[in-house]
Image (cartoon, rainbow, N blue to C red; front, side):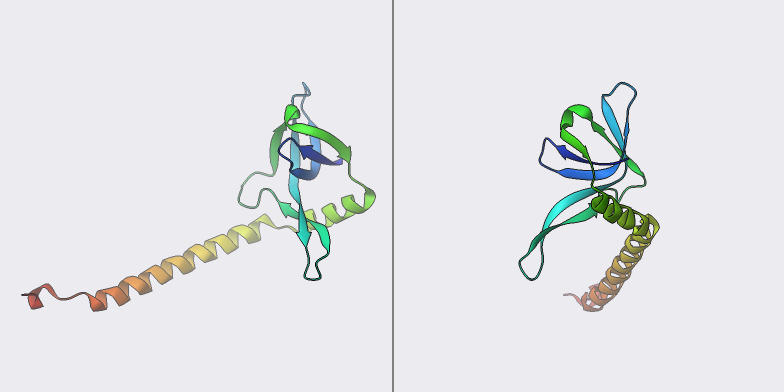
Length: 126
């Protein structure tokens, strides 16, 4: 079931909630933060941001005592969440990170080569 939780720190999380056996925590699959956003026209709305973008996990654990209140998401919000969670591809994020790291490595090598051209030769020093 898709729920929205308001946490004691003010954050809101939407996801597929599974209650633990002893009601002490929730396992939340495919969690997204609900964050306030202002568009270019100045209108305030909400957007969903994946909590696990840089994680290999597919769920988080939240202690029950960290939740102020919990409610079932509306049909419209559930549909929005479902669309985003199916579109989200963790593999593509990992590939983007790997590509960025490769580009950084290449830039460092070019920088080192350039700097070596400006280092004086020890035999030329007085």
